Length: 247
Image (cartoon, rainbow, N blue to C red):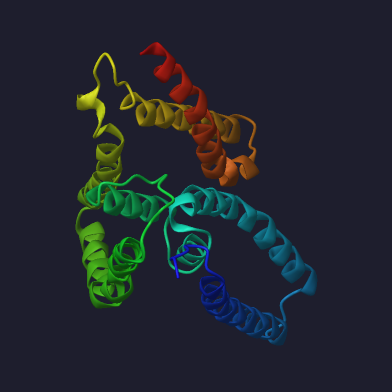
């Protein structure tokens, strides 16, 4: 029997796991609601909080949907659905899958993975992300205590270290964007595509920030990420056609 990344058994297994996660969410939601009422919180405020939470959950959900669609061609629907519904990260999952496929001489658009190749990709995506689960409780408290002590002694140094850590994280993703720029030739300009997509996404994010600050549109700040993702990915299509035609 040939291997299928969209096998029904995968949908069943993933569905069970996600159902358990959703059941946990409902359980704690009910417990929190009952506790809030028990301590005398205003029911109208509780309803307002619930409505706000539902509305602003849509924003990251759009970004997750984009990631599932991106990964589904190579990995099928069940696994991206699982990875981005539990502890997955859109940026991490895409990069992990792309790097693993490239190591096997394939691309993210490949749709003919063998079972062993599929397991290799899933192994890299799953095992690596699990580091954060055990690393946070092991070093998180000590790191937070150290940063708090440093902030009390010298707030400027504390801000500098936090900003340096953030810039380091961003630099890792920038390396992934610019990694093919050196391979640009007169007959191959595909290395420019991720750079142009990044620039478009950055412009959209900047415009959203300006609107949020100038017009006090708080909602646009929550939707800035999915907007920049969707518009950037949509622009990748004309960029690809344009650079292909320019060769």
